[in-house]
Amino acid sequence: MRDLTRTRPATLTGTVARALAGVSLLVCLTGVPSSAAPLAKIPAAAPCGQAQVATYSHVVWIMMENEGYSVVGSPDAPYFNGLIARCAIATNYVAISHPSLPNYIAMTSGSPQGVSDDAEPSAHPLAVPSIFSQLGSSWRTYAESMPQACDRVTSGQYAARHNPVVYYSPYATSCQRNDVPLRFPMNLNAAFTFIVPNVCNDMHSCPVHVGDAWLKRVVPLIVASAQYQSRRLVLFITFDENNLDASNQVPTIVIAPSTPRGLRVGTRFDHYSLLGTTERLLHLKLLGGAQTSQSMVGAFHL
Image 1 (cartoon, helix red, strand yellow):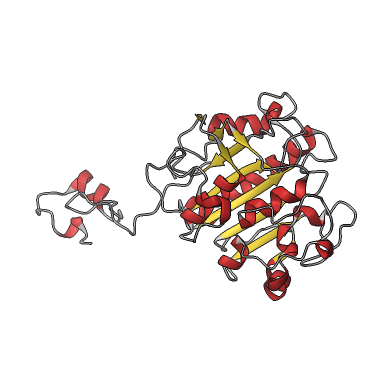
Image 2 (cartoon, helix red, strand yellow; image 1 turned 120 degrees about the vertical axis):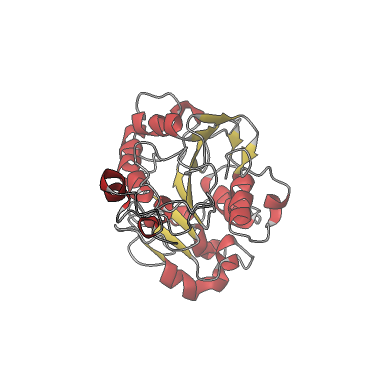
């Protein structure tokens, strides 16, 4: 791009010339935005509604636990509800099953794969395709309180049933490398990042306000990441299942630069929708139930 201070007429001097000097212009003479133009920083307080169009190459899921739609509007979840106001929520989103594990397997492979309990990985070695196998090495799981990488045994506040990759038996090598304890700062360079709070911070075994405080610490770190700031990352916050209500309805928040602030979508979605939406954004083949699920891409302006 030419420097206009060198191409304007010689009579353009004084205040105007000084204003133009040294400025990196954001548009060309034709009015087309420059690809080299810097993007304005997205404030953590208003992460959504910052861009009409974005190209997403990074998807992050945060999985909370065992709370139903009653979290919406709860005084115990002020940060969670603030995110709803500043971003978007799916108001008719349902989980797949009870208890926890079938949901985690379904949302990552397109089917519960016959699992109907919360047994350890040793009881359910699954040699099936999953979003992890689809991505090769371009995925990462951060599991809070996990004692060691790719730990297949529940201990303390770590629940193996909340860490689905440890059930997919063919991927031991990549699991050791990519399924790691949650520490900060997180590396969000992978195409897909699965964030698993421990059983206290995910609202499973501790009150809602504890999980809400955890989200208040973690979500701003994701919004501040280079990937989000460059309009390439979308964040979903959902729950594996509700608190055994027959509807199994759970709140699901969508946080993305192109998602309008305050958007509420009443279309029926489920965990297969989340899988299929992620696969579409990352240009992957749709697995199992994701093939017939309702996509969230258009509804949330992704």
